[in-house]
Length: 311
Image (tube, rainbow, N blue to C red; front, side):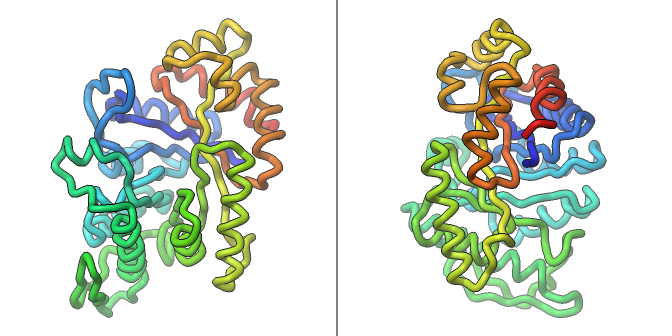
């Protein structure tokens, strides 16, 4: 199982903070560095110095790192128009030498849209429809042969004779990651477009049901389930001993006992057991470790040295 680092910069982080985490993650052997795509803090934190733009961040990291995979979990359609977003993703992919993965969603956090003047949409159904259309259009732009044009008469956006440029380095396009718990439309989108399905922050028993649902959608679409990678995200808190576990939990405003129940927390031996017993049976290809204290680079060192080789 690959381990990736997943960050929440809207809680308070500068580009330099994120660069330090990404370079450390790369150096110690994590497979990927991913970040959320949000503009507003959540919970009782200052959020200072304020939000950073996900794709501006990834563009910088594309040049400031060398080998680690880079991506979002996830970029909401409510922040973007599909044409400019397709250009951004393709350019950052080229800047990174083909290391970008595109996590895409419908958006859920209404307050950040109000705070920054963004249209949240009238309903979840509308946002899902916007996402479906955008996926069709972005893939169409990326896969249109050079020298030909792309046109699409959509409900939310219309393309007329677009050159579909630039092209991403990865062909036909960067891997698309889709998550969510929707019973019908989400699995259908996963089956049609996704290289990876990321199950949300729910107990492993519910994750198994969600994975089974997307596998069924793949079979219905004539796609082999083994062609789809599966992953989960979970908050992580590892310490060499109980005192260090407690200190790291308190640093992110949580209790060690609660994190043991709802995340992967404890000593390396405890965390290895938790991952192997709860996530191993799901057959996951990747686990995104949500790191909430971005100043604690020693945390990444410990996980890489004591946990990563055993999961």
